[in-house]
Image 1: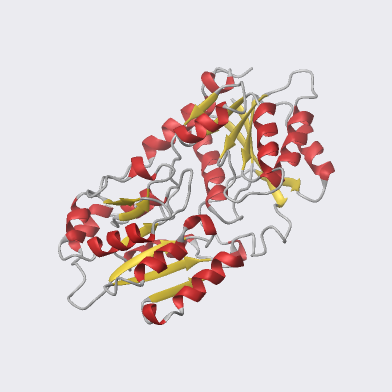
Image 2: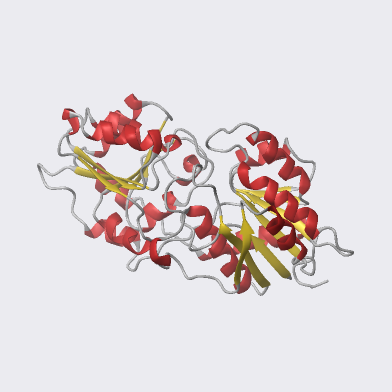
Length: 384
């Protein structure tokens, strides 16, 4: 099929942009003719006060060509003209990230359908309910879901939410991973078993990775670490707003003196493997979540994962086997989990239980779900 994929893409930062770019690569690898249609200006600065693009345009993953960037949040005529240019494709896939983009995407879809033989339109919806609430946000997402011919989401929970907002088909497909630098060699489990446990007197090194936002619960992790002196914590990622300030305040408390490292600013993908190798456990103490590739990322690099039972974490982590699961927003539960992880021998037990990570099969399944007749109504083996 001839497919237009519309969404944020490299060099924009973050997991969604990386996922969109990798999706374009995988669609092409499956034999489709793909154009990636992205943004030249993605958000107003007041919504995203940090640098929106990868510094210096560095390649966190291979860029996709052809990528065009006709869309700007501040130029509504760009929304219509971009949609008009897509009328000759078989399938338009729009990536829905935050409500503020919905007016642009609705305009693009209407322009695409104004032709005599309009393409099918499906949406990849990363969060049916946005992580942060905004006035009118839920209404805008509902409008978006009702406008398209089908919706793809990344967890059964998100599927139920989407089905409550649209009568069209909703398909659930696990979020396929886009690991910086690909799978490490040797495998994560082999690396983990070859590493010794922390020596007596050395702390268990816990890593929280990614932009600091309230829903990720990094402040809760630091609150828990106050009572576990055997643990040190690294928080690596951009920090701005109230969530970043809260993390900095906690890190300065006397109970955590010398045990918290804050690596502020954007972390290039090329530096992620080395940072993971410096730590023993990856922590995902989220208050709420939908889907994330970070469990796969941790396991692929030989790190057991401490996470809360939110989103897809409960199905990706086997409690006590390759990580630990706790209730969300529960500092006492996080404290107990950190104490368990610091017990002699516990880390080696979890390292031995790490799974073999496969990235090819998840992407094959994802592309099949995205292009299949159940979602698109089209035969992916034949052009119109």
